[in-house]
Length: 146
Image (cartoon, rainbow, N blue to C red; front, top):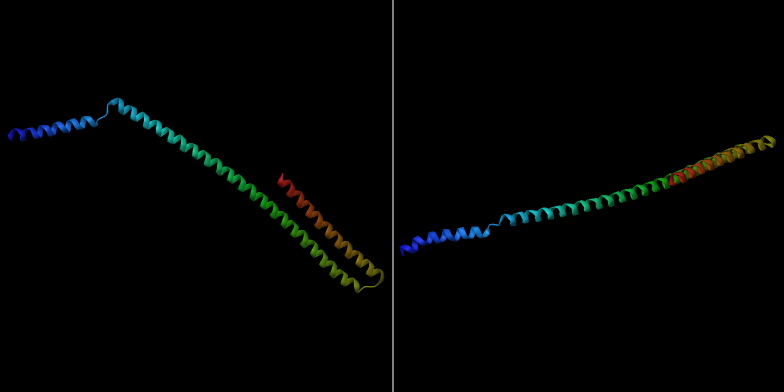
């Protein structure tokens, strides 16, 4: 039994040494594994860079579309504003004409005719100015579209 007790540690040490040497790779296997890991890493990096480039391109496209949409909306808003200003100018001229007409009614003869002619001329000039402003705003909007 003493022989078995002395052999146990020796057998155990032999098994450990044999197990450890079986787990170790050769230098060539290690070099191949390192080269494979490097190649896989380079592929992963290349894919990630390609994905980033695609996302950047898509983002640029989205930003360009958004900027274009904003410019169109701003242009439309400017047109609406200019139209509203022209309408307000015409409404103001119409109201001024109505007041002048009432004042002219208090006059008689040639004086009344001259007053009405002046009121009508003032109204016509205000409408022409409003139309001119509207045309200029439309031309500016058209130029911004180009």
